[in-house]
Structure formats: structure tokens, C-alpha cells
Length: 194
Image (cartoon, rainbow, N blue to C red):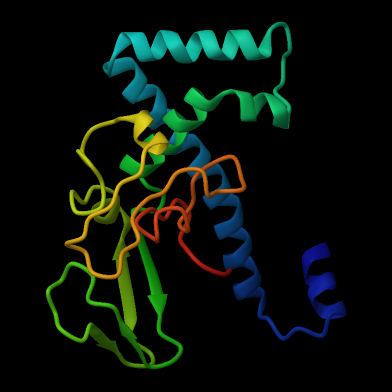
């Protein structure tokens, strides 16, 4: 295959099984996350405040006009829609659990755990991060169980969570808030370097 050829040309030592697994992850993850986010956004808009749904529809009609496909500037102009999408991703994260393995020994900050000195993590330890719970934590989000796209327009901090800088809107250089804007309280697609 072309992928196998490119890997061989770079001198990489990957088995066909690893290549297959990586390709499947890429294809499935790219499709599933988009489909799930759109489904949950429509679900929340349909069951929620009818005025919000009308506002989003009006925003899309106004920005798009007679266009069939949005361009980057159009997406930037549809702020309500973007906040609805990201709010659905907060409430229904894809994936709902992240699994990471510690490559080196480390010490995690105490945060809101009440543990003095944090948590020691040994090299090789598997760490499961429930983004579902993280995104629905009342310690990290105001009225965390509620679909509220306007939350992305206002700051939120909690002095009870030691070392957490809180959420600060407007820091993101992209279309959507990310893990850095929320000091890792929001992990839309995992967090950190890939």
C-alpha cells in the first residue's frame, strides 16, 4: 500500500498491524467525533430553549446567505453556532475516557483532591482520565450539567481547586476554546502534544 511504501521510505520500523490500527483510529475517530458532536448539538438545541434554536438558525441564514458551503470567515462569524457545538462536545465528549501511560515518574498537582503534595505517578502507570466527569464537574464548570453555550463567553474560576487557573475566554487563537483556555478542565480531543 502507499502508506506502507511511505513508512518504508522513511526507514520506520512499524508492523502492518500497527499501521492498520493507526489508520483505523484515524478513520473512525475522525468520523465518529464529528457525527457524535453534530448529533448531540442537534439533540440539545431541539430539547432546549426554542429561542436559542431560532437565534442559531438566524445566524446561519444571515452569515451564509445563498452560499452552499461555509468558508473560514463564515465560521468565525457564526459565534452562537460554534459555542453550541463546543458546548455539546463538553457535555458529550468524544472519547469520554482518555488513557495515557506515564513515560517517566511524575507528581500530579493536588487540585481539588485535598491530597497534600499531589499524587505520585510511577513510570509505566496507566492513567484513565474521564473527560465525561471532568467536563461535568461543578468544581470546574458553573452549572455543569446544563447545556449553556453562553458559558464560553464568561470567565470561571474556583479558588477551592488549588493550582487551577480557571476558564478565561478569548485566549484561543482558533475557532474554538481548547484545553489551554480552561487550564485542562476541557479536553475536547485529549490534551497536550500529539
